[in-house]
Length: 139
Image (cartoon, rainbow, N blue to C red; front, side):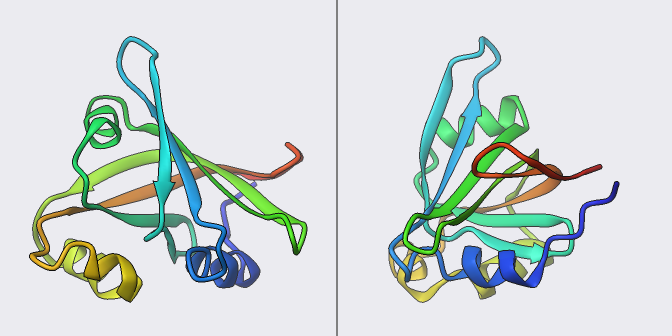
């Protein structure tokens, strides 16, 4: 089975912050201690990757840098749709790919990093489940 993120996923994830349902990301440090937090800039980047802008540079970034396995969850309880995306994150500190992510970050999140000091994170998705845990696709 291949990963092919759908238009429905892209429409909902890309508008998650504006709709009041920002994505939640979790990553664990090498000892297994998790960090969890909202990522308002999360987007479907292409057919099999998510991306987000990491501006806080705190424990989430430290964990992803040391252990790239992460999970991102989107759920719109009003529409009763949601997905869990599992994958491997890569931190992009400079270059064209970083700029491509920045250019697609929602305006509100760009405004929270006016000096553009953050980094892009690309997530190669390996598995997608419904928010209830039903497997939809897997690499």
